[in-house]
Structure formats: structure tokens, C-alpha cells
Image (cartoon, rainbow, N blue to C red):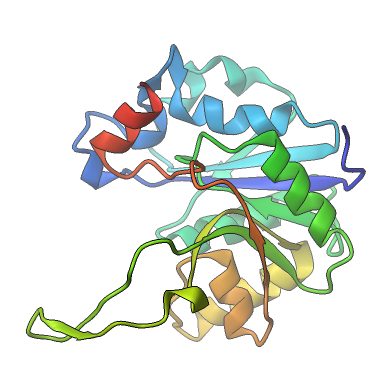
Length: 228
């Protein structure tokens, strides 16, 4: 069922995924007959409210054009940046050139997170449709957390009920996210995801609980788990 919330998507895909120790960037590794990034895109391309999708690629990317989805008219590409925040900012600027407006919703999703469930996507869209800030899919931390000291020993055990693991997509208004990313980068702030840029700008993104199996492939065992 349609969420009736039109949205754009930015996929930062300029990374090389060094921890995978593979012969290519991890988003192009094979998974069940397709490249990992093709599975990532499928959930959005199957959605009736998608307005357009921007993939941010490394300038020397030699794999994208080999994919069948590279010819899909709904997908456009732009140059990525040195860091994730740079790539996302480039993607937002490119979307504006495609007609996206400052008040439009934009979802940013990891290229190597191929197991997004359609129900989670619709949940995010519907629950944030009228939110003044936006938010992100996340999962409450299940395991006991330990804070380590510089000597590698446990310093304390924080209350895990206060902690969530941040996932993607992360959903914000284009103009607000663009402004937050630009200001944070100019200030040299440490930005690890879009929500952290919004937080740095004084906003409080909303946490939307999603499925724990919406994993990001970072190590070989992650890909093996998805391919089981």
C-alpha cells in the first residue's frame, strides 16, 4: 500500500569498503545473482511514491555502468565526496537540479544495506510524514554495553535502555539537511550520519524502530549471513 508521502532518495556509494578485503567496493559484491547495491535499490524502485533516486559514485567507479539498473530512468548519478557527508551533500545538490524542492522529503540510505523491508520503509514514511524534524530507522540496543578506559578495561556499564543503534534510511527535509550538512562540514564537526548533522544543528531527530536484520555489510561474515 502506498504511504502517500512523495520522497527522493540519496545513496552514498563512493566508499571502497576496506574491511571486506575484496577485489572491488563492497556495494558491487555479488549477492544472490545481483550486485549488493541492486538489492539495496530494489526496495525504493518498487515504491510508488518514489520521485527520483540519486546514487553518489566515486569518480573512478568502474562497476556501476555494468549493472542492469544503470539504465533505469528513475536513477541518476553524481560524483561522491571524500567522506559520506560530502557525498550526501553532493547528492542533495544534484536532486535540486532534478527539480527537488527544499521542503521535499529525502531519504538517505547506505549502499551496503540491502535488506531493508518494505514494511519498515512504509513505517518510516508514514510516522514521519508530519514530523517537524524527521528521523531515522533504529533498533534498541539489546546487548549489555561496556565503556572502556584507555587501558582497555571496563570503566562502567551504561544503562542500555537509553541507547539505540542507528540504521538507515534517515529521512529529513532537503533544505534542512542541506543546511545542516553544509554548516557542520564548514565547522569541521564530526558527522557520521545525517542525523548527527541535524543534531549538531540543534534538532532532535525521531527514532523509528525497525527490523534488526536491516544490516549494513561491513565484513565478509555479513555478506555470508545475507547469502545463506
